[in-house]
Amino acid sequence: MARIFNFGAGPATLPEPVLEQAAAEMLDWRASGMSVMEMSHRGKLFIGIHAEAEADLRDLLSIPQNYKVLFLQGGAAAQFAVVPMNLLRGKTTASYVDSGHWAGRAMADAKRYCKIHIAASSKHANYSYAPKQGDWKVDPESAYVHYTSNETIGGVEFHWIPDTGDIPLVADASSHILSRPLDVSRFGLIYAGAQKNIGPAGMAIVIVRDDLIGHADSRTPSIFDYKVQAESDSMINTPPTYAIYLAGLVFQWLKKLGGLAKMEEINVEKAKVVYDYLDQTEFYRSPVAREDRSRMNIPFTLKNDKLDEAFLKQAQASGLAELKGHRSVGGMRASIYNAMPMAGVKALVEFMRDFEKTNG
Image (tube, rainbow, N blue to C red):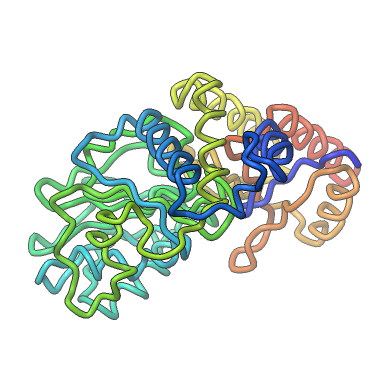
């Protein structure tokens, strides 16, 4: 059976070379006589896999030595609560930028642990843009400032890194991490779910500066304490071993491709193909401010929403899957993460053009 083009927001498409290598190594990893899924996480073989994955991620993102890298379970959503558990450090307030659905989810969990100060919001404009730095009003007593650097559902991306002075900057970078170079030194903490550009669902990567570790609330369970996890190499319990292995293969694939600068070039080109078409037609519409459009998640609507069902049905029949927009906003959404080839993007635009000719 031929593979389709999967535009799902997550779990998302993975690089075919990664899937092929994982399939080849499924029963017998490097003549070990067993699958990675069967290995002891305490054994020499898996410890080597884990160490290589971390080293490759550090290389890709040029992560400074004074940052810890953690491979944790629970996805990014677990970090909505784990971040305030660890980063409040005796303070009672944290500033959040309200930029869409996932920022809202993060705030909802964090408010159980502290007072939430909304530093900026685009809610009044239906979350169609990224609030400009000049409009931010951060509480100077904040323990940290949190923003969602790419809103998966709304398709809004911050193409710049905020300046929060001495207050640690925290980013949920789930849906665009590894899509471009990133100056990690500008952040106190970065976290990201794996199921977009890293690997299978269920794991999160946390990159946290050393000075922010070791201050967890005394009620924090040990599994959620960054210091405990850092001291045990993310192995306070059995880690998501196979997810770490697959993430490592993705990191190797990115390095062979030419690294994140090359990946960004490809992503810019892919996004341009879609947005150029959306900008020259009245049949479809992009709801996001042009300067804040995501390269990873492209929501769009049809002029006549009565055609939505036909669009999705015909797209599926054409091998273009998972284009339905999130239930909270409707319309369509094409997620074109790192592993989506240009061929898939061109196939989508060709289908959209043909559908417009037939139904416009």
